[in-house]
Length: 203
Image 1 (cartoon, rainbow, N blue to C red):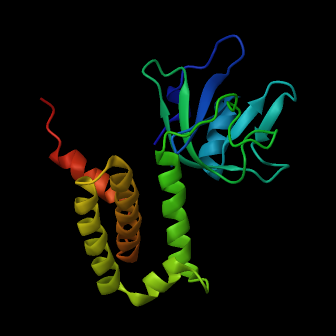
Image 2: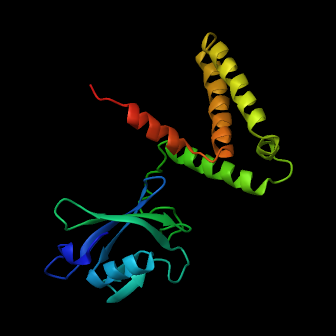
Image 3: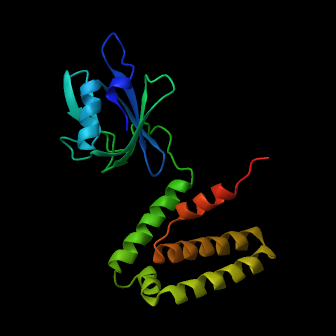
């Protein structure tokens, strides 16, 4: 666990910069500053707490708006004079209503959408709303989901012989149904990534 006493604070003001990053999407959300008391408050409460240079006091992000940042993990940089805080945001982080304070250029590396889709599918599995295709598939169970993945896999192979457009369409269907199968089995895409990492051997 991070020890506040091991951090190198700026001798002029006793502060250390803290970059806040979404633990799921990896998007940078904001930059703030902490003193040792704010670091301890963050560790104790599990919610990101800064030292407000304008108010001259501790300030928990979201204390007024409710858009708190729940801490997932914190680490120092190599010189111990900056922090990276990975957090699970509740609502938008920026006071403008944007997801991130760095919103001049839209952030979406594609993986962000996959994560959002995965969370939506998990929610559908839990709530099973009426009239939803995904609810119907989750209710049908493992065999139906596995069968559908098999069908989509065959269609993807056939599409590969026709055109990039067809391959894109069918491969997207395959990925979608594979995600449903994984969630149905209590798994996530991250489990596949972990397996691929184990197999990876750099040249």
